Amino acid sequence: MARTVRTPAGTTTPDRTAKSARTTTPTRLSAGRSAWGLYRETRRPGAPGLARRLVATPRMVAAVLGRRYPGLSRRRLAAFSLLAALYVLSPIDAIPDVIPVLGWTDDSAVVLWFVAGLVRESGRYVEWERQYRQ
Image (cartoon, rainbow, N blue to C red; front, side, top):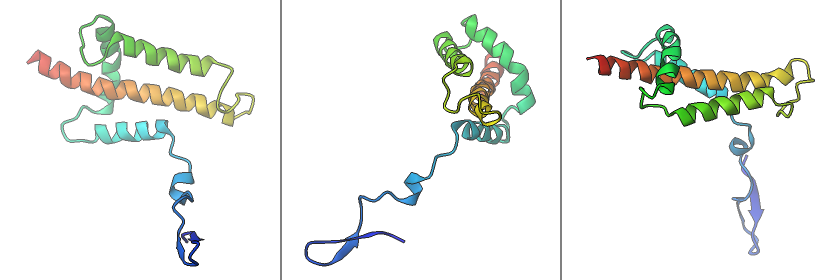
């Protein structure tokens, strides 16, 4: 039910300053969205499957480090790798690691987000590789 506000004239109008329930609910974890996007990407017709992407990931990393793949810069790969590693290894977390199961969920979400991003990019790498060889 929408909130209303009484105006000086005595009438009521919808309260536009009140936050709606939609904006106050927590957003989905970015890691979950990334994993779901990866799943949807692998289900597209003609797109490389998950197994092919997983096998291509080390090749893609080697191609990025060797500057043979233009789709991902060495700087970006290094930055995301460093940020993910720092968050996982850091004692300062969104949820402290001393809480038995919950403490590891945020670290797991960061690792899932990072790996899903690598695997998604490896799909683009496989398509680039396919075009490059022809």
